[in-house]
Image 1 (cartoon, one colour):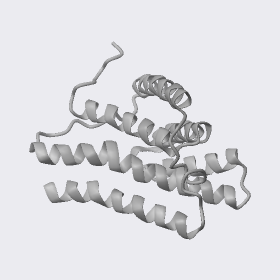
Image 2 (cartoon, rainbow, N blue to C red):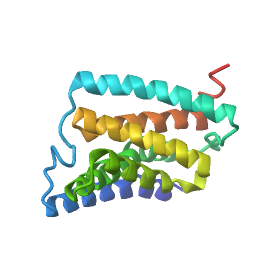
Image 3 (tube, helix red, strand yellow):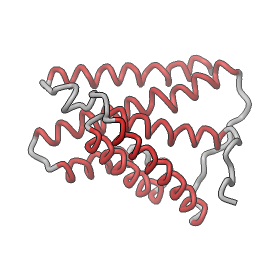
Image 4 (cartoon, rainbow, N blue to C red):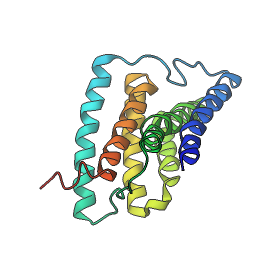
Length: 185
């Protein structure tokens, strides 16, 4: 079990490194085109506050329409739990953001796509990769992806969307651990 979660923790790191290498080979500027620049603090903070609000609204929608919630986790050893949380909150969001709102967005814009079209395409593809959660959830995740992409573009930094994505996944982790269930009541 630990080996499985360590792989889920380390493989996204390898994916992130691979995506950055592809960006370098394609001649993308890592700071501006890929978005590895440090974000403007005020802009990043604004997007983080908006994101927390979006998470709250999304949870209300999920409850209202009876959509699937994060599943409760069975007990597991602390090291396995730490690896699982690291994969979901840190490395998973990092690789997904680098690939979709970093590399994907940059390559589409380089090919002449407008920023809104590239944001919509990368958001839809990212959401579709989560098809196992169902069609309505994929639609909601497309909206999530648009917010993440807008934050990345508005702040000039991928780090903002990585942090936002990690926060959303951290909230799901708290639900899976039973710490944040039915908070709206």
